[in-house]
Image 1: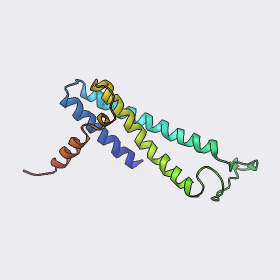
Image 2: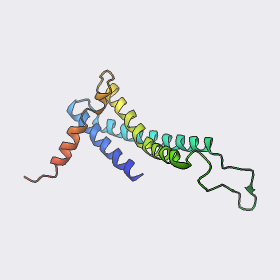
Image 3: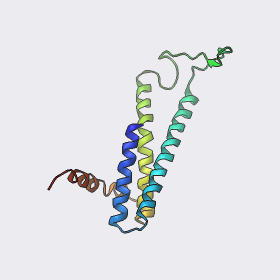
Image 4: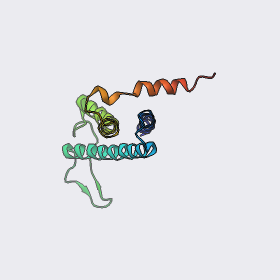
Length: 142
């Protein structure tokens, strides 16, 4: 979750720089909206990942623990969607999806509504390089 927070901060800086450079007005509203949108989509992707895993999970059996109310789950590496090598790749994909999907949603909103441009895949990434260069240059002393 820490890495997602760092990405959210970079997105806030990116949106703010875009709003100021293109004089869209209400820069702080764009930043707040994109930050909230990022967190909402990230929350939805985390829940979607859980739903997908639970849908394909086969280790929930009929052995229900009446005393503790816990399921007697098979914790071995032989059941469920995330078992074996392919399961490891699926787990990595689910982790990355919670950062990548919100970024693309914010980038699409930025391109279509904030900048009022037609959709282009390379246009989604415009301004990122300049943002990182300005961040790097901000650490230089004169």
